[in-house]
Image (cartoon, rainbow over all chains, first blue to last red; front, side, top):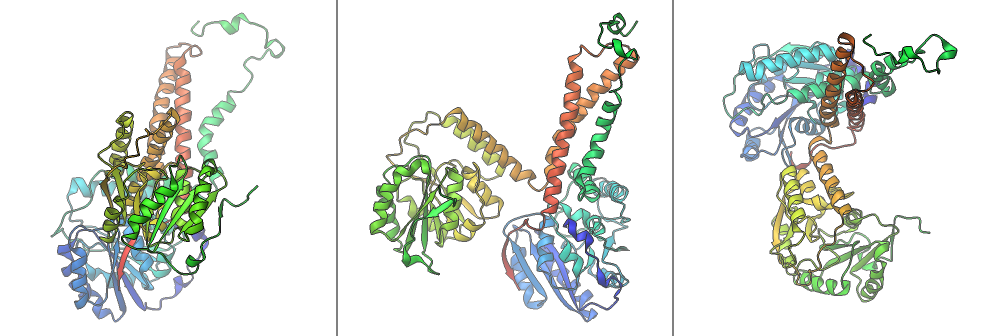
Length: 291
Length: 329
């Protein structure tokens, strides 16, 4: 995301013309087992839509045979496009790579682990046509371990809602639908994938939400743990300050300095009232405090 | 007074245009040099066993202009030698970067300007580059020079390997092989040239280290003053920051700054309680000074992190977080 993006208005917000091309962006990291069922489901869900589609699988340096399997699947599903990264760069970078290679005027991002249901894609598109720039999935009934995944996620989402002010319940859900223009404007880096809704809102996008199905993991292992708490907090703090002060840093640092500067300034008042005697040594001034 | 940073002497005409040699050898002449004519002869003889299609690129710093005479002699009979002169001393990393960006070969080798490894090493490195490796670095092993002073180097490389997640043992060994695509993408600056394998690995290139036989004349112990160790330490810190926080400065400065400010705040709070409720005097307590110092220092550090964060954010469009290996349409 760039700061000047904020001034770009999304002109066709009011247009409800249906979309011409759909790009599905799917970051893949060691998901070999899940790829075939995913493609089959995608075909089922997207096929009847009567819209040209491409499925961009971004291989984020998998160490299993994900890429080989995708190559084989490509014969059956010609919509597949494979972008192979040199090594593991992380989910955000993989998504950004996919976004940059996408050509659709509507882009859907989702996980490769089958926890998202491709059957939600048509609903997302429909919602997008109502005039939104970004529609976020909301996994209301999450099928993940409560303590290690759901609870931290709930707390993080509550915090993001409070701090950034976007009314999105589930920032961590990868299943999202974007207008192409928004995707070309986004510039994700580091661990920004959690804050897509927030940075989109900063650039003036209209954001909708839709409840999506969430399924338990069948194959492979989850790539997340609880260790992210500090990172999320730090990123959130940074994003909030950038959103408020990014284009006027002096105001930000002035606000930051105020609690230090103001009391200091107030303490500058003359120490004693008998003005002309101020410099004379005074017994009273040397008096210990506790008498 | 010369105005250009790098001034090129006449480039041999055979190589002008689109013609690309198979192999380029970049020789930064910065710290010291041995007999460059002999170095050239030894290595070009070895390279000739593979191909005659090569070029040598010498980058010379003003402090080493003593080398120019022999290089000019070399150039008269050899169109395959190119010479660049720095007009000021920018250091080894800068010379290396200048050489890498000017080398035109498909495989680019870097070579120290003094004897480090035996010329036969070329063959090993060349073979590995042919086997799809992107960056091949060498380690002089077993060492034939004195072990004196090797301990700091050992510690240095151990830390650097741990930080970067890739094991390498001889960052100052100048003989490396790099594919052109990798050479174009790698940014070497400051004192970071010993970390070239780590930087390449971070970009996702395939990096290997091989053992190379040390040149019999490589016996002069590296002379390093305390200043060199200090700069190496700083370089380590730079590497640490590059590897972990380059895109997230606030995670580093925020953690350090918040911890410092919190300590300062606790001290000040404690002193405030003492002053208000127990009536003890503050003026003669050094703890007050410490508390204020920590508090201010901490807030400043967080502020630096924020500035970094704003910079990263507003330059996000120009930077690239990933490297694509291939696209299958």
